[in-house]
Length: 88
Image (tube, rainbow, N blue to C red; front, side):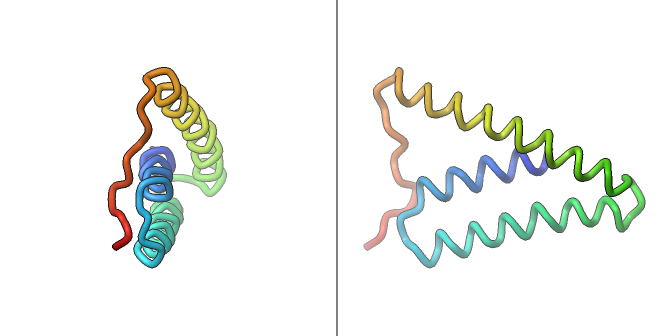
C-alpha cells in the first residue's frame, strides 16, 4: 500500500512541480521513504523479505493502473493537471 500511495504522490510531484530543486528533492525523499518503509517491515520482523518484494511488485502494478486511469480521465475530461508549484 505504501508503494502505491507514495508512488502516486511521487508521480503527482513529478508532473506538478516545476521548480527543479524542489521536484528532485521531493522525488528523492519519496523514493527513500518507500524503501525505508519496506525495510522497516523486514527489520521489525512483521514480514519476510519476499513478502515486501511481492508487495512492491503489486504496488507497481496498481500504480501503473492508477496512472493510466488518471491520464484517461484527463484525456476524456479535456482538463490538464495544473502545476502544483510553479517556478518563478
